[in-house]
Figure 1: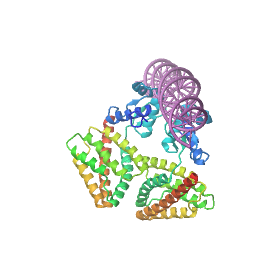
Figure 2 (figure 1 turned 180 degrees about the vertical axis):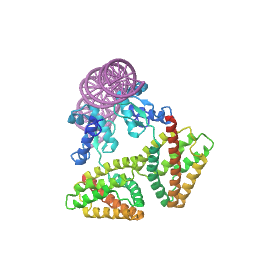
Figure 3 (figure 1 turned 135 degrees about the horizontal axis):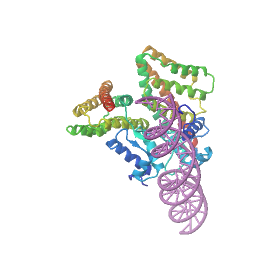
Figure 4 (figure 1 turned 60 degrees about the horizontal axis):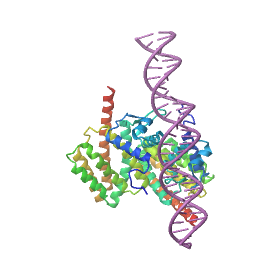
Amino acid sequence: MAARLGVVSVVQAVVKSLRARIFSGELSPGTPLGEVDVAAHYEVARPTAKAALENLVASGLLTRNAHQSAKVTLLSSADARDIYRTRAIIEAEAVRLLASTGQVPEAAREANAEITALRDASPIQIVNPDVRFHSALVQALDSTRTSAIYGQLSDEIRLCMTHVQDATLLNTADIASEHERLLECIAAGDAQGAAEVLAQHLSRASTRLAEHLDSLSQGRRR
Amino acid sequence: MAARLGVVSVVQAVVKSLRARIFSGELSPGTPLGEVDVAAHYEVARPTAKAALENLVASGLLTRNAHQSAKVTLLSSADARDIYRTRAIIEAEAVRLLASTGQVPEAAREANAEITALRDASPIQIVNPDVRFHSALVQALDSTRTSAIYGQLSDEIRLCMTHVQDATLLNTADIASEHERLLECIAAGDAQGAAEVLAQHLSRASTRLAEHLDSLSQGRRR
DNA sequence: GCTTGTGTACTTGTAAGACAATTTCCGTAT
DNA sequence: ATACGGAAATTGTCTTACAAGTACACAAGC
């Protein structure tokens, strides 16, 4: 059983590495990733690289047209809004359900504590705990498929973040306090209030992100 | 541009054919689909068959453990409930939004008319228009990602249906009338009412389907 | 000078063959 | 009857090869 070793499969290992490189910003959007390039970089066969690329294309992290090199996806502002809309649908339901039972997920509390602790750190640092906070809410639904869907959206959200990684889109303290208010509503059993706080939280983030992506694409056009 | 031709890729053609065979019931759940079998059947190379199988595994239609033949997924009652729960989240939001604008999607009306027309036909016949009815509601949201997610769930729902294809789970007339009530709520702008009708509709279908899958698995154990 | 056509280079799509690793199943021995 | 060992079957990966399509550049014509 090589269950918890880093390498279960060569393809998966390549996928994992490429994901990390994309999220780290080493591979900026638009960077062409040819099958032969990837194969040479990792010293694997081309079919292996091909499979890894196809996996990432399915995840939405890469984009590829027929007979063209795969490129790191450049998400438009419309994409960002679409992602956040879909997110909001799922998270809203999660929050309502949590409020109806009054159960506050421990993982969510911990993630927000981490955000609070990183108050003075670089804004890029809070991406990870922020994603974990929201994931914790969804995973509390205990639905395999809902979690799987949300995981895929999370990847695209992270991709968005890397596009605007230099920008301070939102104040860290504001994020933490909004999360805190959300947890309070859940604890108090206020489903309506929780849903509203969440909707505002996501709506604001979506708007900021979309505006920033728009300004970036315009800047690139010049 | 070979955009709207049937064959864009050999792999996709194999995938399409396998999907059809699975949904038609020709490939019953548990049927082993080895890479060499598929390759021989379609007279394609093994890597091509492999790619097609991986595609279907990603869709949830096939299941595969490492170094084992892929098998047509046998969905448990728990899976069915999970799928319906996830469905319900998305459709509820779609219905609420449609009610807030009072817009009834034309495609949904047409699909339900088709169901009504098939009142006396075989219950298996209404699967297609039923799926189309619900899809139309979601597509009215006009969100690429939400539609994509829902499409994947639809596939699994259809897979469930093929598992219990002989059973008359619900009365065709009842389905049509519930759909009708749902559309009336939307037209009247009654978001709350529409959400409730939908929730009941899905909840009942989910329960029936889950019960039937349970009885099937027990029958198989004997 | 601009547009159009062609040709070449690069990339992906598909195929065939081969070997390693792992699982499963069956036969044998205790 | 159970446990162990080995053979068969299957998948995972790599190598090689050719076909097909796209993109870019260069040249010819208007």
